[in-house]
View 1 (cartoon, helix red, strand yellow):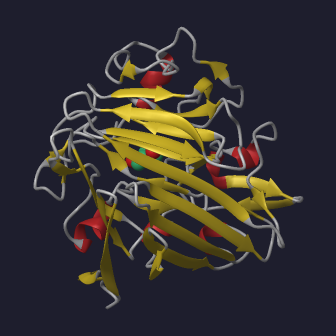
View 2 (view 1 turned 30 degrees about the horizontal axis):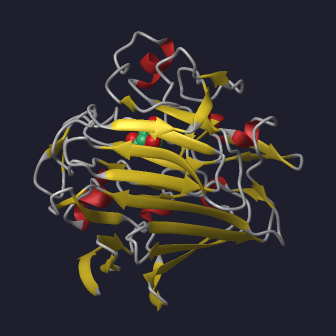
Length: 348
Ligand code: GLA
């Protein structure tokens, strides 16, 4: 079901699409492919919206920290926005101190996507298309992107990304949903529990750029290889936590790149029973503990969002891969197709 969500300053209309299947309900905006709400039941059958967002387009445009949005052309950071590809130096848009974050100041999260609904067998969903022109935000090549959101009969939300280019470029697409399994606006996620199938992570410098040397999570606050309460080690005086004001790091998934999505993380809210299981084809997972939420934004349910009121689990290639030859490559060349799939399963 399609409805008008709002109008941009230049007159472009933004629509909201409602999807429901297998007990999951979601609303998706043509602006940024934003998941504006995602509702699932708790163990007593009570629904809550478990994803942070706004109830109007003006707030998204005025300055959203990527709530629910599709991220591109390069999810996460590129050191000083610079990289060399096939001998050519590129400078992409710098929007995070001296670095480039999430595709630059106007990333895919701020474009209006073409949205086409579909129903296939027991699935329902949306195809979202966006063409990023050659040179946009400094990236080489015209990139044609297609993202498919599918809600399955089991209530799983699946994202399939594909992209093609006409010049060599770098691509790293992800989704920036802020999860709070107790419900958006209900307070901290510190008592929710997380498990990540990773024995290493990529430590960062003060600008959150990986040093390039993955480190073991064992005996550090970064060890989520066994289920752990998020707040448990969050205040440990560990240099990496100080740099990021909490968790904002890339976990090196033990499975590596996989041709099919494989399970990589489970988030559970003991109070409601809601559980999110994630599977992906990607080699990395950015776990961000909502460190920069600071009580200045009023969310869709009318409450203020404060630090740690949600967390993001962004499946991805590693940050700054274009400058880190030892990391899995993010280069896409003409004739190749970029593919990435992430599946979110909800139970209670
Ligand atoms: C990502 C980054 C964080 C932060 C958020 C948005 O998760 O890794 O550092 O920029 O996006 O605030």
